[in-house]
Image 1 (cartoon, one colour):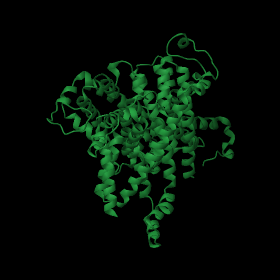
Image 2: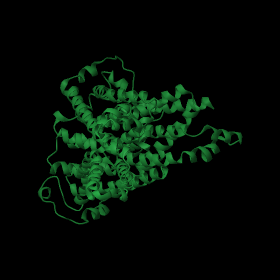
Image 3: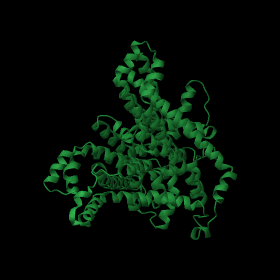
Image 4: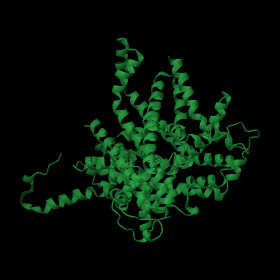
Length: 268
Length: 308
């Protein structure tokens, strides 16, 4: 029984690893094609070839600015919104939270056509800050929902003590509540960062100049221009671009004891 | 619940009451930035999408500067356009097979197997499944493209069994993108079901074991009913996520060959950005938004039902 379960799992696991095997092997194979094979002469030439400012560093820096900006906007706005939602009783609480939850379910791909129209009207096309605020809005419902849940688990007593000492609401939030939910805030930050880092469609539509495009978009143009020849470099580029999110995900999965934090938080 | 007590208002009149209302209002001030962002970047585009779908707005030309109201023309065009019904059907197939059947069933099976397997195997396989999900979308799409391409891994595997593989991305684009989406998205269902199964009290299934309930019966009559709430929410969430898939399809097939894998998001993109017809593009997007709203409403109801 146990052996059967193990064997079945290993087979499933292999099926999931197989498509990634090509990525790893091709990245160290200077003569890589689309077939998965053991490189005849393994080398880091592919990595060396893509490690140039124009090809890698600039797009990665753009990705970082977009993702960190999105995560910071999310965190600030979500913490502010979550505080009254978590601490004050009101008949608006529930409808607001359900509206937020409803917002999490809108297909973002579907609103890209109207958002493009909106950006044209407001002359925001090709603007990094506007793109950051838009990307932050798409993950905001989830961030508020998660932050509120984390904040609910911070006991009220400590805050009451601070209020007694005459601290204002926002001061209490900053000095008492936020330090206590540090870990939860870290999860929200990383969660949003990972989503923004991997986002292709939004910057693909909203950012036009190459100097502003993040790695997700530049790797796509690279694939379009050189992909038919430079498979190995494409694989190397993809790996370098993926490493940050793999590391961040591991941090969250370890830190919160399980990988559930990301998905579990979605269930409310 | 603190109900304002009228008797305490006393002789001071409306003054303190007004101040109280003001203070209560100020307390809600921090919510404002989120409301503004959501109104500007979420509600406004949705509203504009519905509005523009009744116009002939375009990317270039006369209609770009001065779009005309065309009533239901764009929606009428959907019915006569041979691509739209095909695209709607492909979207239904894509969601039903890759999300509802694929990701959910595979995720549940993996989670069930994990409850019965060794810890090391479970965590190793869990990592493999999650890896496909954590990778940036575009990287996963490249890997899937390479896997299904003419001399890709799949055909190499088939070759070792002596089977001549096809050029999957051209000959069978839908099965290819469906399998790729199952590969990419199963981790989410697996995580949800692992969490749900870990909440199933052990003594329930053990009691069933005493009564001699066979494995399948135990699964069908005990385990699944206990986690039915998670199954329902997971079905909704995976449906919504799959409905919005664009990058995976765009990189693998770009909707082709000849629209054979053009789901609604791809069609909306093509009409709006490749052909410059914003009016028709927003009409398609509006249909997608309405479908998303429907599933979103069902999802909210499920959550409300679960939390009294």
